[in-house]
Length: 463
Image 1 (spheres, one colour):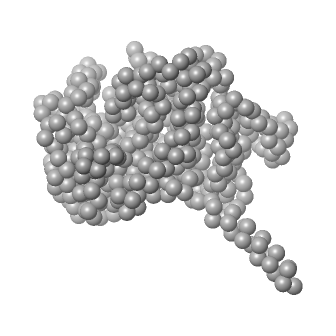
Image 2 (cartoon, rainbow, N blue to C red):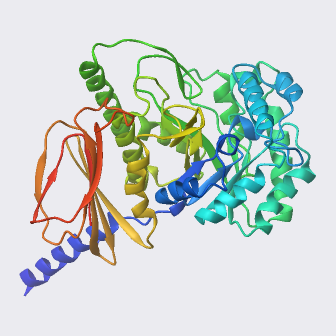
Image 3 (cartoon, helix red, strand yellow):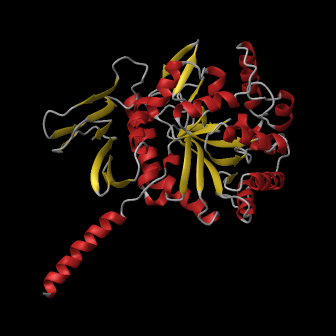
């Protein structure tokens, strides 16, 4: 009798552990920034909307990063004032801003892009996360900006109080943590007075080992405040050796031929997923006492070597799936991938160049991942076998999806009797480009038998 009881208890424990090892996750993780999107893409173009709907974004960010810091509600396009920009920020942005202003004038864009954003959000049934200009916008116009989006029946999930305000490009113009605290607190209070249910988030500084660095002082002073609901961080996984700045490689070192270099990059991305990024999030959790985290810009560090490659495609899918499956990321409640559409190569999902739209290597993986954010009450288990990531999705304790991300050259055959559809994305080499014909494949098929082949360098979705 006692043996029977203990055996039953053991089985119950196994079942309980299985259930608690899964977790529900927020659809707000599957978001996209819209920086520069409306300068180069027409939201009235049916084909563009159809492409965006194929990845089914759940959250869209407006107006964007540095653009958001100089956005004005009552002016054309993004409403940027070049004199303000020159007086408040150094670096590359003033040149980029001039290009954006010039292009929008050339295209005859006289309407504020907030209305284009609203069209896109409604067409994709997406919520909004809004970046407010904490430098020069009036409180009245900040409230009116939010009200306009709310009045158009777009759900607003939160407000970013500026973007990357701790950067040296602002510091060199005399901007300090005291300036940021005073203004962001004032704006947060007026927002909550009019929209009491809206969450506000503040800009945390990048982590620096030197405890006396201004970034650590910034985070320390910010952590002592309680007027906000979440912290904002930006994450760009760096795999190419060289000098980087603001998510972009400035100098890229040669580390051998493509096969050797991408083997090195693959090792670095594994270290990122398994070690450095969990530690980074742990450190933010410690500084801010496990305050909710919004990652409103993230991507593979922009590089000419890795942009638009199979490597980037695998990384983007893997990052999304790690965020929703790995317990160390449970404080992360919202993310927006940088970027949905623009003129840049490798950073955006859709690139506009010479009036042509180019689809990047991240588009197909995002279609696969979107499956997991289009259904309610999915739970996920994560497993890892060497460089093979395995994600099991359950609904009401029944296995619904299996997703494999294979970073290795090895293939693996698995048996799965009830597969209805197999979707695969991959290629022969991690450095294969989406722009190279027949180098990266993306296909769906119904299985002929119970064996499913997990190909090298691939994503496989089993339904």
